[in-house]
Image (tube, rainbow, N blue to C red; front, side, top):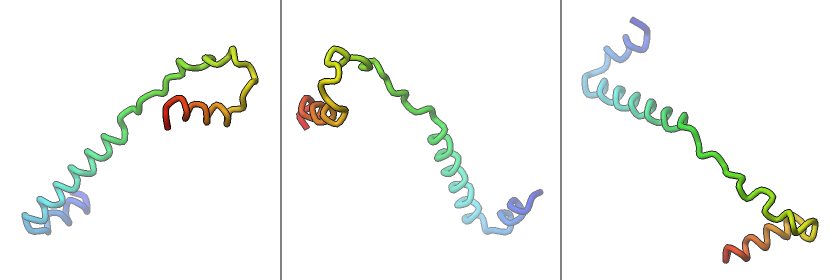
Length: 70
């Protein structure tokens, strides 16, 4: 038996339950972090190629805000 298990056994039953609940919480939290994140799509890449170098990237950002209505 390891030190952690020994310490838990020394706790009263209600605190042992709290430890178990906390461990379950930590495990669930860890699983959520390990889920693969949504991959970015770059299907828009090259869509403004025909515009050439008419605008800077900052100007495109401003235009995108206008197009979205922000």
